Amino acid sequence: AQSVAQPEDQVNVAEGNPLTVKCTYSVSGNPYLFWYVQYPNRGLQFLLKYITGDNLVKGSYGFEAEFNKSQTSFHLKKPSALVSDSALYFCAVRLINTGTASKLTFGTGTRLQVTL
Amino acid sequence: EAQVTQNPRYLITVTGKKLTVTCSQNMNHEYMSWYRQDPGLGLRQIYYSMNVEVTDKGDVPEGYKVSRKEKRNFPLILESPSPNQTSLYFCASIRDVRSYNEQFFGPGTRLTVL
Image (cartoon, rainbow over all chains, first blue to last red; front, side):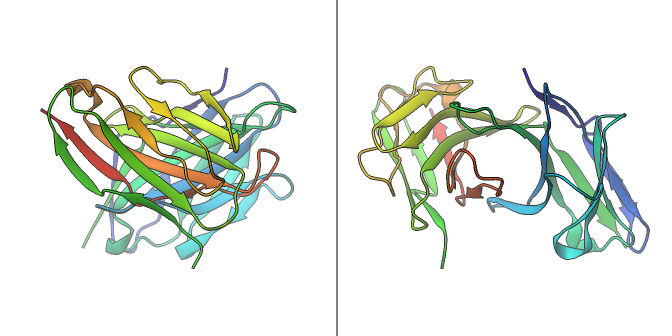
C-alpha cells in the first residue's frame, strides 16, 4: 500500500521568509510525487512533480521541492513567502503498475498561512 | 481551454433524495476519477474509470455509483444520500493510466445532506 504523511496541519510564516511544507511517503517501487495547491473555494491546482532525474524540482509560482530517496521525503519550499501563497497544500504519491489504474494517494493537507 | 467542469458547484439536499453530480472533460482523457475531501482526511478516491464502460471502486465507494458511457463524461450518482456524504467532491482526469502527467481537477462540488 502507498501512503503520504504531511506532519503539520498548519505552517505559519512571515512574508519574505523562506517556507517549507513537509511531506514523507511510503510506496513499494519508484514513486511519482506531486504537490497541489488549493485556494479558498477553488479546485486543486498542480504545482510541481517529480518523476525522475534531478532531485530538485522547480514548479509554478516560485515553488520548488526536493526529492530525498533515503529519507522518503518530498518537502515543498519557497525562498521568500508571499501573503498570496496562503492556501492549503497537498502532497500526493503515485505508483504506476502495468494493468492497474493510476492511483493517486494524497496527504491530509497542510494549511500555509503567510502574514505581513 | 482545457478543463474539467462539474455541476452543480453547490448542492443542499435531504437524506434519501437521489442526486447526480456531473463531470465533463474536454481533453479526450481516458482516465477519470472522483474524490471526496474531508477535513483532516485529505482527498480520498471514490471511483475511477480507465476508459469508456470501464469503472472500478476506489477507497471509499460505499453509497456511490458512477457510469462512463462517453469518454468525456463521468457522473457521480448518490442513490440515497446520507449526512455522512456531506463533503467536497472533486472530479479529475488524466490522459491515460501510463501518463506521467498531473491530474486535472474540476472546481469542486460542495454537497450538504440534511
